[in-house]
Length: 159
Image 1 (cartoon, rainbow, N blue to C red):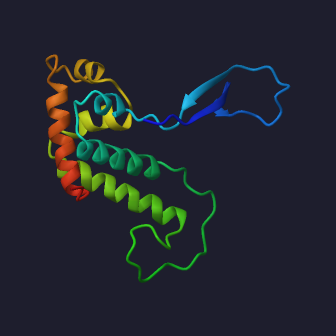
Image 2: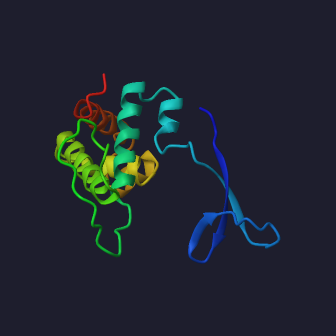
């Protein structure tokens, strides 16, 4: 997997892109923007390409749906027709569409699958940490995650 490294300045408000001025002496960290929470499982052959793509799509929809709301109202006219899911949508509509896709994918996965999906795919927890947090037996998380990702792949129609 190709790395996409970026320097982030660590501030009291949280990490942010490194400032243009390098004269400031602050704490910083290098992060890999291409790294995915489930890339470790995929790189070691625990999940196949279809499940990895489903997890990445779910994580992308989760992140898009968590965009901060606008402070003022947008007076952009609503789109009436269109084929592409996000084409022609304003940022608020894209956020709502991503949230609906995320909720639909988690609902399609079935009862009891949302916890493992959210913890591993969206929150980036390791399988062992998710198993402990859910009070599951050791090594059961991988099987349940694979079942959940298979159903999510069906929802996103990943072949």
